[in-house]
Every structure is written in structure tokens, then in C-alpha cells.
Image: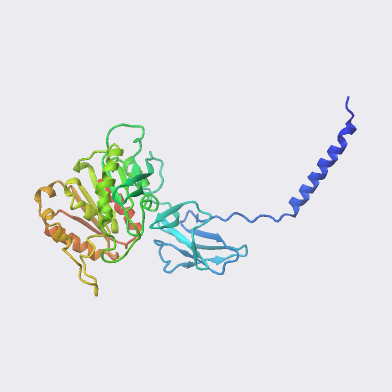
Length: 384
């Protein structure tokens, strides 16, 4: 038998170690509570927070949040956490970031982000609108797709929405190309634009046909504003690379009556630059907050060089046979949008050429608040 006295030194050592550990733990300061940001309350008040103990100033910047102007100052608490509360805020998704002592940073406590053109924003969603909220319905999938652009001689990325049941089912679907604006990227429609959730809810309600939605990256290089700043490389890439590859990769119909294209702002202009020269390939065109860039002369700007859009495409604009297959030509722009006159003049020009154009002037300005609504209204009209 082993003597119990043999274990006394081991027990003493263990108790001494335990005592030291407890003493060390007792001397440690109590950790501060976790910083929660953003915090969305049930009354749609939203609180933004960031821990920046040594900062001298912190501002909140957000493109579509009302009343922010040049930014909103956060107030520093005694624990080094800065915060500000806004609201109530209308339902929707909003991009934001912090400016800490002159340096723009995303919210370190929020993993949800949205890409714009060569930039990243933090993202907050304020629920309260069933048509774009995450609902208890069947959900499709958003995929990031890498493809080779023979036009640009490099790999590129786009996003694709496939409807519920696509991956396990059979059969073909209509295809809808959805383009972003000048300060966005191929990620934007599926993040801040809520395109996947909007489509899920429309399909579940029987308001829209199941369809494949392709969301390409409309920039082919650094953004250049001004006359000719957007170039036409994307339009060439679209018809040469994007359309052929996507329509080969996905189970979609490739006839005119099952193909649609729409876009916002820059993407709306690209829609016209692609859709009109290739009118025999598209049965549906949608232009959100946009039109033919340059159709409204800017005071003091030099006269545009070369033929106008109307002159370049006169034969197509006057082709009565092509018009017959265009089932929907839909425009929508906010009355406070800086491109409202561009939209009006563009619609007027197409009507002069006997196009059946639907034009809605809504409330609001040049923001995602409107563009999500336009998608929600446009998509149910497709492929019916």
C-alpha cells in the first residue's frame, strides 16, 4: 500500500499554484463591456459606436442617411467609446464609416460591409419593409464569379443571383443583367442594394418570375468624371465576354423575350449604350436615375465632339420592326435627382422616335433609397 503522506508535497504545490492564480486574477482590472456597433433599436433609432481612447474627434459619414450633411460628430464617453444616435431612420440598408482624427475607417465592430468603386463601407440594415427585409421565404444564392475578359486581357469579377431551387432543379430561366452606378461596384446591388432579398420576396409572393440576375462590374479602369470619362470599353466587354460566358455557364434562355437589362446612373447610360445598338437581343430595358449623358448641355462646358447618340443610332431608332419586340422600356428618376433633366430629355427623344416609353418621376434624389424601390417595381414586369 502507498502511504498517503507521499502525496502531501504534490497537494501543497497545487494549492500554492491555485492561490497564486486566484490572487493574480483578483488583481486584474475588470474588462470593459464589449462595444456594440451599430445597435438598431425597435423604434429604428440607430446608435453608432467606436472605441478610440486617444482620438481628438470622431465623425460619422454616410451617403444616404438623412440630415448628415458633412458628417455627424460622435460624443466621447469616459470609457473612451465615442457614440452617436440617429433616427428614427426609414427602413433600408445604409453605408457608413467613421472619420477618426481625419482618417476614414470602417466600423471595427461590424463585419457587414459593402463595396463601392475602389472603396469599402460598413453596412447597417434597418428592418421594417417586408419587400426588402430578410423574410421566412425560400432564398436564392448570390455567387461571386471570376471570368476571363478577352477585351481587357485580365480576370474580372461579377455577382450572380440564382433563384431558389436553381442548384437542385432543372430547366431554363430568363436572364436579367443589372448594372451599378459610377461610385459602385459589382458587389453593390447585392449588398446595399438588397437585390437578392428583393428578388426572393418577389418570387415567393408570386409577383416576379424566377430569373438569373447577373451583376457585372461596370468600371474597366479608374473612374474619370467628365465628358468621355466612362469610355466604351465596358460595353464592348459586355457583348464580347460577359453575355456569352454567362449565357453558356447558366441554364438560361437566350432569345430576346427572355433577356432584360437595366442599370442606375452610369449603369443606366450603359444600358442605353448596350441595349439600343443591340435592340434585337433585349426585350426589356430599364433606366434608373439616368439617360443619355450629355443630352442636356452644361453651362460653360465645351460642345460635345462627334455625332450625338441620336445621330449615331438613327437607323435603329427608326426601325419599326425592332420596336415591336421591345416589351418594356422603363425609366424612373427622383424629382430631386440632379439627372432629372437628363432623364426627361432622353425620354422625350425616344418618344419622338415612336418608342413606347414608361417614365415615372418619383420623390427623392440620386440615392439607393430610390434604386431599391425601382428594382422592386421593375422586376415584376419582366418575362410575364
